[in-house]
Length: 378
Image (cartoon, rainbow, N blue to C red; front, side, top):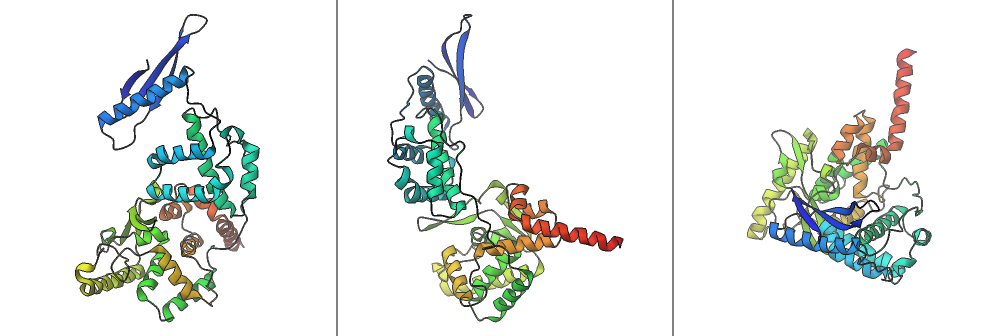
């Protein structure tokens, strides 16, 4: 019988499997970490169940079943692991991508027949953006990794899989300085919904992700100290809007608020106060900075569609909401702001992520720096 020892929030599990040639006991061990939020009694029960299966695996009674179809393994993963590992919105997105793109080509294949060359062929055959293909591969990789850990399969085939190369494109990159100035002039002069215009300005002034912007509450705005706290993101989960944690832990951050941005947010506060009077008790979310005309959460897709209508027939018609984030970052880097500061401002998990995304901007900045040095010396 497996030996279970509780150590803090985890359980150490040891299984005796026999003796070596010198008569020394052979022991295999593992660690089990129960899901966050379960009671102590429930955690102990889960640890016992985990220990039972671990012992079966160690002694040759594993759940090895490589004749199962990939769809069976995927169903097991989405039922047992994904809800524990991922945000609800991510599970929803992964499930949709799996059903639309992965299950049709892999679902009926036995897991023993799936190998790296086959996965390479499948990934290369998708008529999708390489970045999207990479996301699909991450899902497949997660399913196989967990299946191998639990003994359903001997090992994961997700090694040395060749993914399609990402094509360099200027789409969704920052606007050139002159074009950005023309856009700001167009934004100020064209008659349009002022609430929409303020959303665009906040995105441009802060570099926030659109979900973070629409997830702002008034308690996140500190007008006295001129700061904005980013604590949530507004997520659409199956047509239902929910405030969830930001993309990563580093996405929870505090950014500065300049005077122009402060004017925009004060104007938005005045608008919300008037909307409260008009809607009365029907105002569903008075705590939010941006809401719909009926006082509900502001739908991100509706903002995007407004942007499409606003820019239709202009030189800006290909603009996206995320492109405003690129504009913000590019302006900061071009102004000489330190890369690490910009990375923290954007909420990236690693400064290398920022360096990779804005490699072209950094190269141009280095070139200008070299030219400036020469001007000083000549």
